[in-house]
Image (cartoon, rainbow, N blue to C red; front, side, top):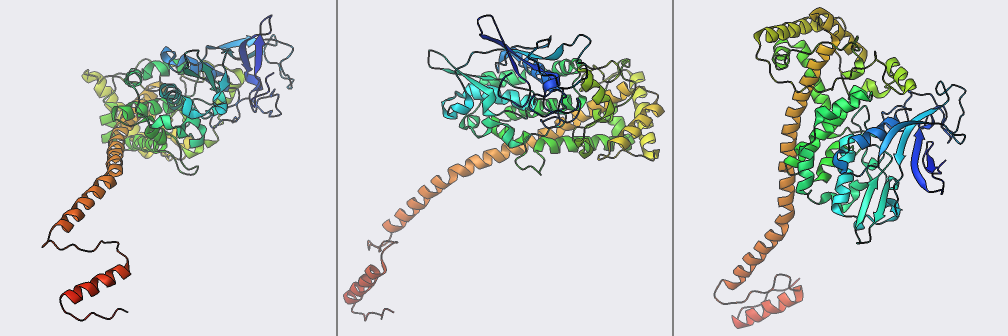
Amino acid sequence: LAWEGTGGTYVLRDSRRLPLAAFKPRDEEPFAPNNPRGLQGKLGQPGIHMHIRSGEAHLREVLAHKLDWAMLAGVPLTLQAEAMHPAFFVHSVTPLSRYGAKVGSLQAWVAHDDVASDRGSATFPVHEVHKIALLDMRLLNTDRNDANVLVKDHPSGSVVLIPIDHGGCLPTQPTVMWDCWCWLSWHQMSEPPSDMLRDYVASLDLDKEAKILSRYGVPRGAIRASQCATRVVQQGLEAGLTLYDIALLLCRENENEPSQLERLCAQAEKLVYSSLSNHRLCARRVSDVSAPAPPCPSCTSLSARSLSVTSSARGNDNGKSNDDAGRTGTTPSDSRCTSPSTTQAPASSDPASNNFLRRVSSEIALATSSSPTSPNRNDDVSSAAAISLAAIHADVSAHELQTALDFSFSRYFDELLGEFVKRASRRAACQAAASRQPSSSTETDEGVESGRHSEGDGATSPPVDAHPLNREDAEREAAKQHHQPTAAVS
């Protein structure tokens, strides 16, 4: 058992006592039944990380490695594995499995020389800082401290940063505090990103990432939050913003004030709910989606948590279905759908499909307007009831209706984000111009002042900052030359 951390981390060694890998059991995470640090709890309850349940952090470790495309950030190889050993801590009498093995994340051990907390951040290369910051912004990592960034020195003198400990990634809500990212105050963040990094961000496939996250049973809210954060990074880099400017859009600078990402998600969600009660707006949005795919057998009901990532009622985030999934460690076949949260479907040219979808939208508007529990953005229960009633009236499955709602949310969010990024880029350009204006204005003032002194009939004027006694002597001398009485000086 390692000394560091709030959960159980076991270092696996070979016959020569050299470290090979690190194993983190899911039942020994913070607020899990067998936590060895005295933080016992129940699987599925809110964990130590914001909006991440206990028992689900080990999946985040695995997904951080899978979503590190081309190994840009250098996340070590991480797999989901089972292990048995007498050194494992067992506090709960509940059996872990049928044969007593523990399920957790197994991460390859990486040899390193130091950690970032023991080094000065000024010695880190710009590219190494940018690659870790990009990964944390995409996955909305809520636990990037300088102790989980390994430093490896090369004989050539270069430094490589290796990120570890990603159990705080992929929260169900896009809420990240500014102090969750240790690199936010490093000076490398204000440097412009390289062309290679821009091409890498532009090549990210959000639909492919959504399929991977759904396959591992990640809640729909976490998938949507990660996709929205990735869109902010993509459009921000296209507009010429630095990674520091983009990071300020994703994190909270004040604990009680939502971030710009949270505001954009809330506005897009508000527009989606408005489209449910406006048949014209709903018909226009739903008609953009092609004929939906056959309903998934696992989607038998519409979950309230799959519709929003910013509702205030989701702070508890302790639904019964998710509790069951948290206890088992895998996604049951009747709890979540394996389809991506965002469907980028082209517009349908089939008149029959468009008529079908228009009928669906009109039925949705009729059901939500006549329902006693109309959609309320602050009440997940009434929202789910109204939309489920809409699906019944429209005679469609919850999967088909959820596909249309996700597509509408994506369209609204992209439109709002595009306008906001344009304003942010213009604001950044104005601030850059204002920072250069004082030096130019000072030079202009000096030029005007020197020209003013050179003009006239050749008489020299006294200096501007002359002492009062010197000015008095000058006035007396001028009065003697013109034979004028001097004025009394008070």
